[in-house]
Every structure is written in C-alpha cells, then in structure tokens.
Length: 304
Image (tube, rainbow, N blue to C red):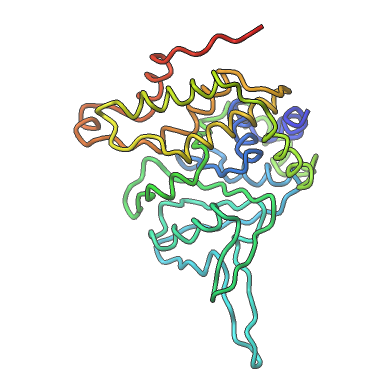
C-alpha cells in the first residue's frame, strides 16, 4: 500500500503521528494544499524536505518576509541582449515550502492564490503552468503576532487542511539524530506518475448518499450557530469530501465511511471558520465548535 511504503521510508527519520502523515498524504492525493501551524523547532521544514524526497518530487523553499515581492515567488522577465528571458521563481517546484506565510504582505500572499487554485501563474499576460503534482506546504507561527499579516479568508480557503505536528518524542529524536541526519540516504519510493494516477483513483472512491448527507448536516449545524460569522463554504465541503475519499483510498477502501468524514472535517474546517467578536471574547474557538458539531450531529450507521 502507498501509505505503508511512505511510513517505512520515513520510519526513524521524521517522528510524526500516524494521523498527521495520513492527512498530509490525503491532502496531496486530493489535489489540495497544507497549512502547518506550529511553533518553531518542531520539524516542519525537515518534514517537508523528507516528504518531497520519498515522493520523488522536486522541492523548493522560500522564507517569507515583509519586503518580499510577488515576483520573488513567481519569477520575472529579464531583458538581456535585446530579448526578454523568463527566469522561473521558486513556485515552479512540485513541493513548495512557504515558511512563515503570515510574515509576507497581503499582496505577496495573494500571488499564491492563482498557483494554488489553478496550478499556474500569469505574468506579463502569459500563462505558465506549474509542474504536476503540485503541493504547497505553508507554515505559520500561531504564537508570534508582531510583524505578521493575518491570512485573508480567500487564502485560508485555498488550504485543504491545517495540521499541527506537535512536539515529537524528544528522547527518540535525540537517539535517532545520534546515528544519522534525518535526510541522509533518504530515497524515493514513488514518483509523480503514481501520485497522479492515485489522484484519479481518489475520484472513483464511492461516497454514499447518507455519508454525503452527514457532511451537509455538519456544515448546516455550524452555519446555524450564532457564534459563527462565516461558516464552511461550498469549496470547503467539496474539499472535505475529496479529502475523505483520499483517506478511504489510503486505507485500502473503495468507499467512504462516516469516520473518514469526521477526520477530514476536523482537519479541513476549523481554519475556515470566522467567529463573531463576542463569541471569541467569551472563549469560543473554531476547533471547539467543530468538536461540538461532531458530537451533536448523529453519524449514519455503517452497513455491514
């Protein structure tokens, strides 16, 4: 199985919860993008590099700063010897790590919108397709606020899932680093062609009507809450469905079950919810409301 191969390749190199790796791969297979929200030093960059290497995909990293310009991401035309030459930016990689996304200005953040939504960038009236498969792994520090710009709603909605790596088993980490560097000798166990083929298989995973109704009921419950100013968008629900299909495929199934919807909903919805100010002041949180929704809305009974 695809998931088992990746787990074996990363074993002892990158210390992750199984759920985190499964959701990361499901995001890739669903054609989405991933937002990693964690404090510095928890291994986000190492994880991104290791994932790109075992997947056999090209990798690029860019550190966001307030003075970064959109063309620093997408590329630029240079005038040399009487002609215009196209110089590609770091966005032209199959796995793009955008470090500290919220340190870039809204103008630079928006340069990623077309790339993430349509798999292309447009410069000087010319459209340049990005390599496939294309995955954006963006990180942001949830603690530090000075010198940062909150992600616009449209930008957050482009990320299929938001995950936190959390602190690893530090004893196991120290022991592993004594023996070798995490990326040393790490080899690809798949390639882009297989990933693109798996994306097509994801679309064929069956979603029963009662499972789809369950997803719609969860969204309706959140939208009806007075604490919620902006509930899940139609795009969000489509991405939850596709993420659930990918989770089912990774576990060897050709159909989704309610647990797939629950896992996808927890990863894909909280970062999209906007709460009213009074709700935030009273201690409400998007994560808490999602947990409440999953408890309040009855899941369909799985058929034998």
